[in-house]
Length: 152
Image 1 (cartoon, rainbow, N blue to C red):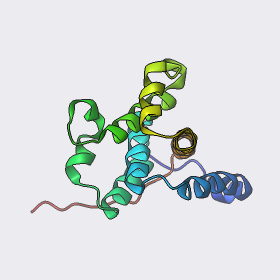
Image 2 (cartoon, one colour):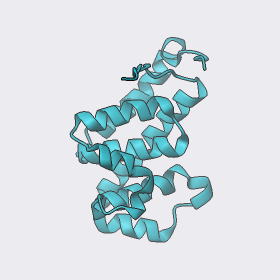
Image 3 (cartoon, rainbow, N blue to C red):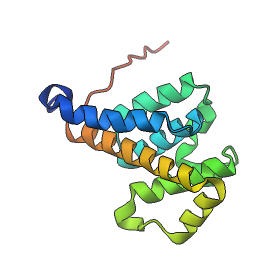
């Protein structure tokens, strides 16, 4: 697959606007570990190879375990995630798939038990940001760095 265009070259001001949202989200005070789980889960749902590559590496750099990354797609069946993480992941899925889920009340109530109202707004902006990045990367076929693994 080949990149369609480079949005940073074509419209740097527009990309700076999305970058400003990302900067705001990064300064939100939410746990860094939660950031990468949310970004990775949304990217899994959206099928964004570029963002999956980036955020699984970032998660590992922040100390996330391989096991938790491998099981992220099946977080409901795993005991490896805290109640706060589970609420964030359910919220991530509901917001990412908003046209299908309409963000159900039970998901909202579970998130409210784990996050203050302000944190819930910040978490939602994090989800909006990663969904925006996913849509840019997928639409324009952004290419992730290739890692060559040689057989032993």
